[in-house]
Image 1 (spheres, rainbow, N blue to C red):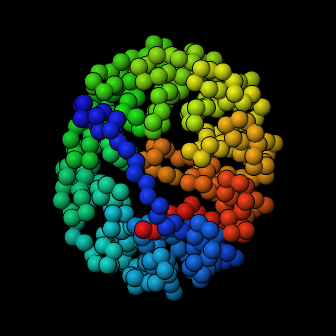
Image 2: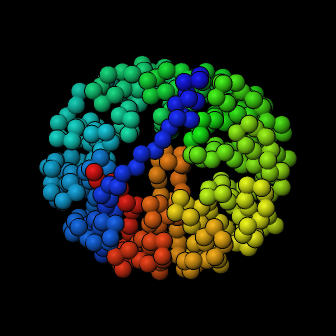
Image 3: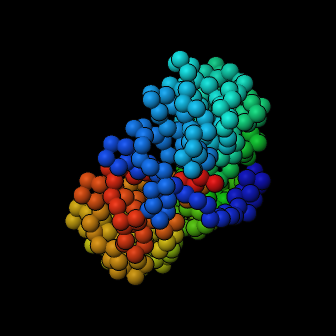
Length: 377
């Protein structure tokens, strides 16, 4: 079990600047903009998907094919339905039959599966046979024969698995790193697993030992790189550290994760932000509030609209927007609302678009729809 935690604790995120495009709907047609807001692929499609794996699925004259970042058709429209590429493989439908193709459009010979699953960024996909789930790679090799009742998507290089009515954790090699003996289990981004065993909630530390936390009735996973997470005791929310110690006593009605040294908490029907010592840094005053982004801004609700505050509590972007979830995978282990890489997807007067950290509208334009930016490199 030490392998699991050693890998997580040693995990580093190497980020290089990659070209990104976002799907936008202008009028009744779909095109793609770059991070400067320039329309680099004109809105000519009635139906299309976001970029993934360097390609985007588009519908041309009733059939689906794929384009590259220049807008060139690289896989001719021939499919009844088409899903996104992941690790060079996509799932498409022809005559109501689903199959895998590579990024040249070639049909791949894969193991029989009761259901076809998307590949992930690790180059792995689930295989279901006779009610059990296993894992294969993009070559169709079985990494793990169907063994478990359920396997959840990989996070931080590991996945939750269910055997009988108990949960454990496996690696991308299919190796058991936490034996399925827990009623609940969650993978954190900092090397600590959160679990429930019988009626006790606790942490599975780097030594692989389950340590119950006194009085805890629920614990949420740690965010990537964070040493505190929120937990419930006696109906109130507080915060524990990686040793399982209550460092901020349970006293709040609701709570969310720490980021940039602050966490949103709810008390007396209002949200504010506390620091790691449990002190108020931004007084409770908002009907809703989300965690800080890595950019140092957090969405807060003022009246019926959302704006953004900095870590000093200044409302630096006026409350005039709606916000939405954007998925960023293993960086946080979850879905977030607000800024990601300097851009936030927001709605304004029934239109969608993006704003930067200065509050300026990217490209100065709003659309009928706008999906999150995706890498095309």
